[in-house]
Length: 465
Image 1 (cartoon, rainbow, N blue to C red):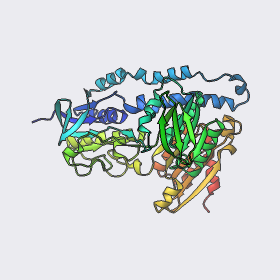
Image 2 (image 1 turned 90 degrees about the vertical axis):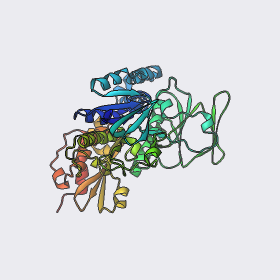
Image 3 (image 1 turned 90 degrees about the horizontal axis):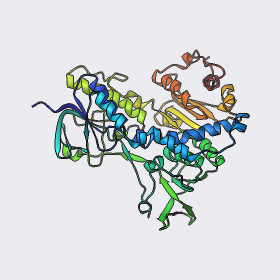
Image 4 (image 1 turned 30 degrees about the vertical axis):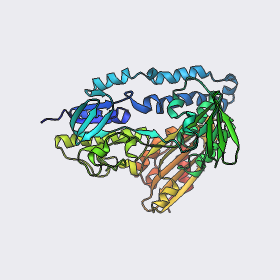
């Protein structure tokens, strides 16, 4: 019997939408299943609303760093207008526009929670649909640490923070990672008295100077940054306040506590046991799940790189690979081929929208050495670059390149400073293209731009003899 569809995608966030879109463009029949809003976490509770909450504070601080502009911005941020602008980016948490796009793309939308019940079989409600291939794109969910009283205190997660309709006078943020540091900046700019609690150094997966610059900027913004601390108990009082007890007995009182201590793949109730799989999905570079020839896991759910843009990259490869498999056409699965996500291993770009921004791609120096590479790293103070000085008086920032000395190519780059996010694509291209250090000398940066830091880094590295 013919299957209902060639491909069923479970999860209609940006990753699932891209799997479906790239597959249907190759002429196969595709359905997408979604239990919540079409468009997913990024559209309604993560990437877009969080950056909208941050942008006004960034713009104000940027103006305050410039004489002349500083005098023109003597007022304060209007929290109500920032929240209203944020809401426009979510379309008021209405997915009608995204649904219209799915339909216009020729993709069938099935509303409900999808669950595997057999090979190529997805149950949604009382009905079971069949397909030649199934792609899981269910994203990730937050992890709540096992702190006594925390769950009962009704903490905010990132969803509650990015969809908030009010600004708490006092906000405690638990976690010094990406979301924690970003939301600390956002709510501080909106008027909250913010205390950030981090068990380890801020943003400790990046180069060490990253967390140092961000912590200094937070303190300057009035955020109370506590590093090396962890709550031992949390209690929500009947009147609404939250008391957080630290290891030394100190108590911090806040109106809300935001927990941002990591995420895990969203594999609960997907029916993996029904097809003989554990909850840890291992995939190859086409996103095919190990031990199967029909099931794919794409984006956060496979645990490879929990970033929206990287999930969409995986989705483009997977959609093409699935269509090729259904149609019996050759699979281009060699490194950097059309049907693989090779960049997951060596060139993952990431931006943290704190102030200063953090932009990094590839390996840190420590990661490169752990991988056994013979590396040399060079750093440069961004405040010495003419283009950066034009952006802000007293510009504070740093840049670093990690070079594989054997191949003479860049394997990692990190930038910290105002407006550095736009430097990242050049570094990503250098790594993906394996551009030699010798050739990079001929990539001339325009003057006066922040990109001139590339020349300064190369000068610090030195020309070959």
